[in-house]
Length: 336
Image 1 (cartoon, rainbow, N blue to C red):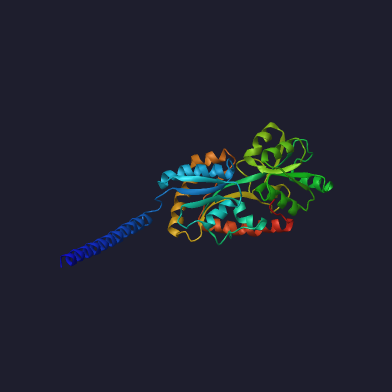
Image 2 (cartoon, one colour):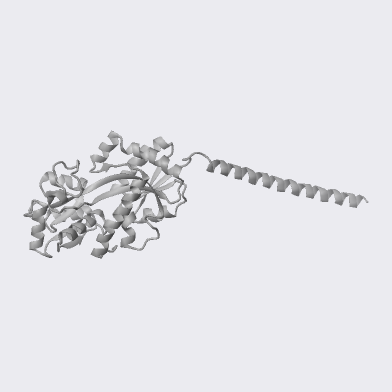
């Protein structure tokens, strides 16, 4: 009887212990779930945001860092700039990121023309939620000072008089300067040879020495060479004259009606990001870009700030895909 009573007490004790352990585990899991639910329901943003861009020291990197530093203050969370080497990398990363507003990209044409140049894992329209147009910069059509062409019309006449003899410089397949040159070539019916360089600096050096005869270059990069007289600027590629280069005619006004090609950069989130998050980001970024001191800072670097609704950015992407996609297909351009 005594042994039986002891065994019964032991069984009861073990049973009670198991029940208490199980109860503790349930309560612990409930607390963890409650903490998780509390964190996920906290107002956006409640942790750092990442903005993916292409290239250290690139125009996108420059813009992203200014935006990140300023908007971090008003959002109350750090914005980290994540630099990648490939032009399509921001799209590849953001299209696969959770649609929670913590992974964004600042990207130019490579995001939406990338699929025309190479195979990508994303759809430029379906896989992103546009936030805002951010910045834009025109290209400048420049020629060596020694070239006997002082206007767009004179340049077109010179190229047509020497088919296949004049070269144009680029610094990257599918880059803004490359597409600007291909559009110029297509619209004017020109036969000229492309020479692609590893960097814009090397391309400009060869242009200055007249090894190549024209280039559609970034405004900020060519300004010092224009001032020194080593390069002549013939026109700007925007539809309207640019305040960045007062007095310089557009390519369209200079002799090629309807011509326009500028570099545009926009901010995107993953598709299915909540509209409230998109509105919050737009509400913080657009006023920042439109501040006079920020506009001046970009202007001094040869860039103009924009700011738009998400719908305007979406419409811009669709229009550019239709227009520039045709140029790429007609020219048979493929990524290197």
